[in-house]
Image: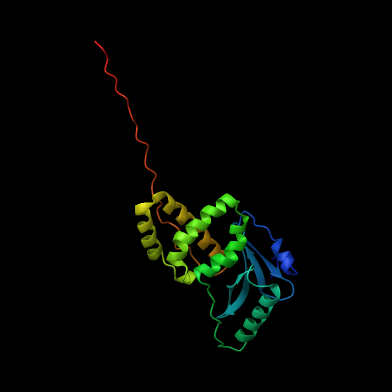
Length: 209
């Protein structure tokens, strides 16, 4: 990996990798092919280079907030050993339920950084809308159609709150991409409710003759 930035990974050094304007990756000096991908949003996830059909591809190994570097090194070496045996099956990617992801990785990375007043509103949107609608679903099983159905129903009674809940869902799913759980954001591109134009009230005065 000539020309690539390399460093000796520790749990502390990884937390010091700050986001830049563009996504970048840093590679471990101890285990070849193991890296950390840092997104502009601040999300950091483990990746590894894996040989498939004679070509290298990046494989997501999960968020840095859910695994230690020691665990990931062992996983990376095990996968590399398996690929060396020929047709060894690739371990299935473990995708968390929406409620578990929100309560662990997302809460640590985002919720706990909010001001108390913001936390109150976010907690309400989660408890009343997002968790009842999506909590029991694995993140990669939440489809755009399901989100649109939920959003349309919520918008009939509270269009403003529906917009805020949709924004929150988009942020959570974007972070799920950074953690390597999904590849695309199913909430992206859904049209928000348009704000109504203010009604102009004109006071007509009858001129006295």
